[in-house]
Length: 329
Image: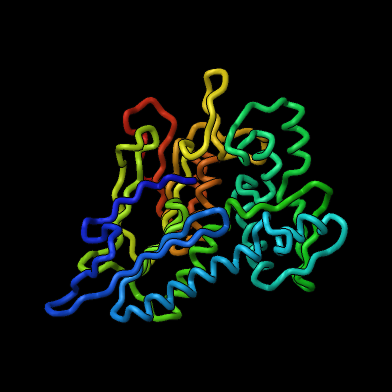
């Protein structure tokens, strides 16, 4: 799990109390957790009508469960599982929604020069990160996995909405994009139900802040110090925008005096080095989750040159300074 340390104001502490908005008038507050896609999704909603809040939250929860059935690679009947099973042998037709998501993934890969890649799964497996117990693989294992990694092995046909995989053993994995897409879809469902104030989080790593909570200019989020979980390096107020964080402290192991994190460079077959954490703020959670990886992998200089217009990026580099963090200019 990505451990983005969130610091909501005392008035927003996770209780069931209602929040006053005017003399004699209060907004109801609802908090809901739902487990799906291997993550815990948290929703905090404010509104005047408790029944509307509950109905909106229930529909948003069902939306993330629907997406789990569409893109999970652990559910055999999902579209992504069908691609992994069949697409090396025949074209696999997918829904328009799924085709658009896959197209976005390939565009992220192209723009990031291959640093973002949804086919990175074989590398994650040989480094032991799927089972949570990392280990150093042999060079031959890395080379074998690299032979099955590469976004250019995903072949999309926009005329037929079909997917082909160029070679046997290539697989797609939603781990680098699924939570961000799910958060955006959940927020859209809340908006459709008339919710104007909400906070939606996927495992505390990818979040969206809709509107503002009562009496506050936005939703307050704190970024943890990458070397000290008890310290923070920045406080941020979010309003109608998303923030995602990737850090080397999330999953890692030590071997031969060196730290290896789960954030993989799909081009070399090795975990990325030189970065501690990256936080991205942008209008869509799909974008913030996707872009944290290439910024982390390619480093600060590359990020400064390739940061999309309007994005805000908070970068922590692996340097000896006590606080090696700051906003990317």
